[in-house]
Image (cartoon, rainbow over all chains, first blue to last red; front, side, top):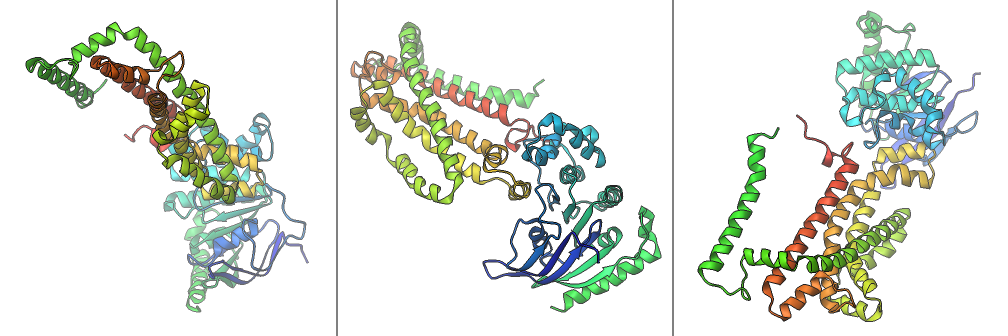
Length: 252
Length: 263
C-alpha cells in the first residue's frame, strides 16, 4: 500500500447556521496525483479545499496527514479570484509567502523570479496588478502559490472567470508545470472538459449536502497536448463524466 | 496641454469669484454702507495689507495648535484603532467613549478643559484634539476591518503572525480610509483650535487669530474681522490641499481613488 499525502475520513462540515455543506467525505490524494473535484456550484467543493488547507475545521471526521501536518508554505492555494495585494507590484505579491516565512527580499529574489518565469511573467515583476489582464493576474496568483515549492497545490476554480482561450492556455501551462514539478494538485472546477483534460482522477460531487458521488480514473496518455481536446477518447470520457455528474445532481 | 473644456473648468470658478467680489464692492459703494457695517473687499484687502504681519503672527499661533492637535490626534487615533482591531471586545468597550467625545459639542466642553488644563497651549491643543480625533479613529478602525477576506485566508495559510498581519495586510488596507479620515480631521483640528480660542478668551502672552477676530469684534473693527476670516479660510484650504496631495502621493500607485481615469 502506498502512503497518501492526505486522507479524509468521513469528513463532514455543518456551518453554525445549520447549513450542511459536506457529509461523509472519504477520499485520498496520493503524492504526485492530479485530482479534480467536479460538481455544480454550491456542492461544497470550496469548503472541502478550505478544510484540507486548514482554513476551516471539519465538524465531523478527520483530515489526516500520514507524514505529519504540513508546515506553512507546504500548501499552495489559488483562490477563485486572483486575490492580489493592490498596493504591491507583481514581485511583492509573489514574494509574500517567503516574506511571511521571514526570508529577506534579496535572498528571495531567485525563487520569486523562477516562479514568475514558470508562469511566463518574467518581464512583469514590476507591473502593478491593476495594469494586468485577468489572465495575467491569475498567473501571478499561481506563481505566488508555487514560490514556496509546495507539496500540495490547491486550486479553487482558478480559471472560472476567464475566457475560454485564456483558460485553455492556462490549462496547458498548468499541465506542463505539473509534469515538470512533480507537485500534487487538487483542482476544483465545474467544467467537465477542464476536469477530464487535466486530471488523472475526477471525483464527481453532488449537492446538499456535498458528497462524493463517483470517482472516474481518466485513462488518457501523459503528457497531454492541446490537440487531445479534439480526440475521440477525450470526448468519450467527457460524455461519461457528464452522465455521472447528471446522476449526482439528480439524486438529490 | 489642457483642452478648451479643461480651461473653462478652471476659469469658471475664478470668474464667479471675481464677479461676486466685484458685486460686493459695488453694493458697498453705491449704497454708502459704512465699513463698520459691511466693509467692501478693497477695504478688507487694505486692512490685510496694513495689519498683515501682526495677523500672520497670530495665525501662526493658531496654526501651531492646529498642527500639533492633528499630529496628536493621528498618533492616538491610529493607536486606538490598532488596539480595537485586536479584538472585538476592545472595540466594543472603547467605541462608545470615542463616540461620546465626538457628539458632545466642543463649545460645551472647552470651558471645562480651560479650567482644568492650566497651560494655555495644552488647553487649546486638547480642545482641537477632541474634535480631530474621532474621524481618524473611526475611519482607521473601519479600514483595518476591511482587509480582503481572500488575503486574510492567505496570511493564515502561510502562518503569518499578528504583527505581520497588521503591518503587511491590515495597515495597507486601512491606508485609504485613514487618509480620508486625516483629510476630514485636518479641517476639524482648525475648527477646534478656533473654537477653543473663542472660549479661552485671552490665551496668555501669545494670541491666536481667532482671538484677534473676537477682539476686533469688540472694537467694531469689522474690516479686521473679515481680514482674519480670509486668513483662516485660506489656511483651511491650505491644510486640506496639503493633505489631499499627501494622500494622492501615497495612493497614486494603486488605489482606485488616485489612479488616472481609463482612457
